Length: 448
Image 1: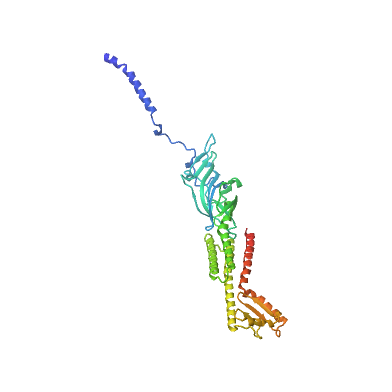
Image 2: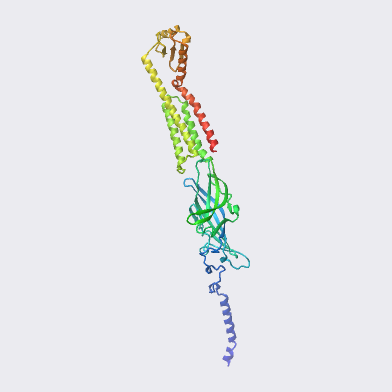
């Protein structure tokens, strides 16, 4: 009895302890490890065939586009292309993606859903290279609204072809365009259009290029025809670039002008200083050839003449003509000296001879022989002073006449330019600068 009576109170206590342990076990249970049923997805992707476009068999599905240009990375004249980074956004409606919602809020997904649904197959016409940025993940965003409207956005860098005309280079302006088009769907299945007209294109105000001034961006749309597949909607992003001239003034025009002016220095150097004038001429010719080669190395090999080619080659011709001018002066000087040397050897001194018409006083005739000219009238004596001799032309009274005097004067004036080599240099000191200045006036008025 005592043992039984002692055991009775212990039964309720054990029940209380058991309940406490059970409650604490349920409280500390990790709910994340409890297997629950699979939640029902709002987008019933598996219930539809997304290999077909929306409203297949009906009218063309409209797909709106807008673009935000992030940067214009580079312009290549050699490859005739440009590189641009942009945000490309598509807008369309797919009722298969509609879902019930009381708050009318959209759902946002990353690029993993793109592979499971239908998206427009837009590509860049005339593109050479393009890629979707993938740092730190694919830069793709998909936003679905309850009524089935879809926003599909991606960040792309594309390198596309740009047909450039260099006939006015470097005083030129270039117009390039980025073209978007559906690859598979003709205008009967898919209608591409700019969602907000010209407002569909946004650009960053900080976009700039080192050699170009970006004048304007604008959008257009046209139909493109392929003989084997049909008509397609094509969208254009067109922009105009105006080249900065200051770089080329410093690197091309200014050095070329200095070389032409340096070649004129030879006109002030004595024609007897052969090494000085020859070395100066060769140096300016080679420098001009180096400038021309450097400019053409950074340009495509086009089959027409560029504006910079005209300037450089005309400058090269001026430099080359200055070298030819000295060659002409040196040749005429040599011929003149050879003739005078032969004349001195044939007639050492003709002073005092009554039948002579010409005599030379070069220090070899005596003073008494020179005084023998006193018998001739002054009107019949023509004198010409040279560097180291005096040539005296005598016209005898028995043979002189007014016509012979005139012929002699005309001959002297006609040969003076070729006999006095210094006169040639004096003329070219004025002719070359005046001609080059006139060429510059014409050049800059035509191409600027």
